[in-house]
Image (tube, rainbow, N blue to C red; front, side):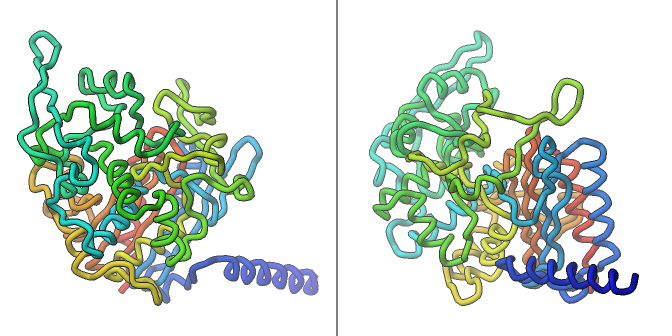
Length: 427
């Protein structure tokens, strides 16, 4: 019996060693990172309860403190039907978590002197030189158009104050107009190139005068096209050369290579009975399915929603931001540029989250007094359409990532994970 125990222990230790070798980041014991093992076990319990209750299939969670990853765990199933357990290196559709990466790419060009933030967009994309704004007339449920008071600037795009929107929002008329002109949100496959899409977008009305309101929309897709124009590369090539390869983000793609297709987590929805159901094909909202995230001859790269990635890869990107633009021996951005990106830029125009402002692609926390929740002033964060989330707290030097594949989002799980993450700090 003792020999069997020794053999079993040896097998387990080899397995753990191989797992660590296979990881591209080092995971330390919780106490070595300043996290409480006992309190982290509460996170294990809560996340697995969501699985046991059938509210989510599975996911991956990561917590890093002061540059050390002390928590990286998979929970639940990658695919329920085939009984495949989730693994920490499984790949997720990160949707709007793509936006922060596109912002970083744009700001790298900014640092090279290609533009100023208040340059008009039409300087690079002439189709945006004459924009109109939609004025809703609620009495007769119609609208009129008026000439935009000013031109869209690059700053407006970075802060979502350009007046551009998304096709899936419920404002009267806009969804129909976007659909009629084949302008889509980037969550699914689109024909043609990013330039084709953006030039069609430039013909459509804005939801507000540039700079006069915050409207979540196609801004980052436009910035992706701007990157292509300035760099002379496709957005896919540029991000790979400038961000993914330097940070060794080896599992981040617009279209997943076929040899890695078995690592993509299945996307689930909730049916009329409140049960998880696999989402297949392309829905009315145009989300990525397993059939369209694989490498193909696609030429449209959505800077707002198109990437797939892993928790480990996205951690490297966030740690670079937290390190003021550096990761290991690679310097991507300057400290002052990161400071600008993660500072409030929109005042009270941003209404997305209670107690937050908005920077360049991030919600910026004004602190617990305003949010009513755990966290620090200056924490920057965002989320993805398929229930993925991240936070960076510069004061605590804390990073949190939670990846699942669920439509609609499970906000309660995000809130609990964030609360428990802060409570696990043990310094």
